[in-house]
Length: 295
Image (cartoon, rainbow, N blue to C red):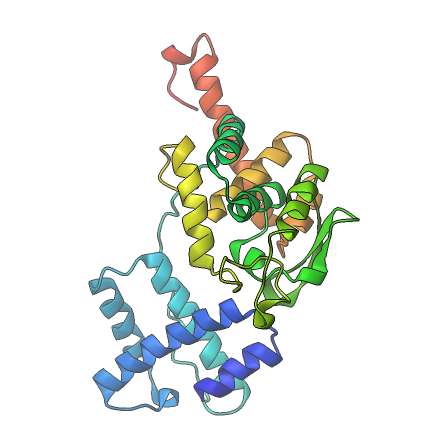
């Protein structure tokens, strides 16, 4: 049944391989728990009590609330699929709420930090691929999975744009600067993919497709040179891109399109970040700030 569900995600929902892998891992974790506690592999027989016990077990193993909610979301989707194909009549996840938690604030890099990053890369990074990874993520706001999956034929250096295949296999076009085009052009002279991976634009020194872990390590390495902030991930570069272009007057609807968000609410998170920064600046700079509590 699990394989049928994964095929449904791949061929009907057209989810990305990365998303499908996440669903598979979540459902395998539940399958293992169900087999261990109920001595059964038939997930269609699971009831609400088992789902609740699974959540409790995850909590006791110090799994974050965010991760637990993601697994619960995967289970909801799986049982909705079983409802759709008539395998069950009631979903065991029905009326089970997600755990409440306060999301940790993502603090973007400042423009000054990104200038320092630019200096750090070109002073200390002889590796052109690493330069490309950091610059593409910051200058375009694409996700690390989208960078790893970037297809060679979707990189239009003559037209200064990238065709990105995002979540749900949705396509969007992202403009790039001439400086970034020149950097990518320089990388092409060094690119040596294996036959198996020649369709991918970015490949590692062994000629293989980049992994998300490799991209994370590269970004973390360079951000560590210029900031003491805890979050030094590819997503922070995406966050910084959105914040900075909005600061510079870009229309939020256009930023939404570039980021590949399905709703404007997702993009508005970055305008909220701007407001928080404005509050901080006000409280530091206003002559009466020391006499007032922060806004």
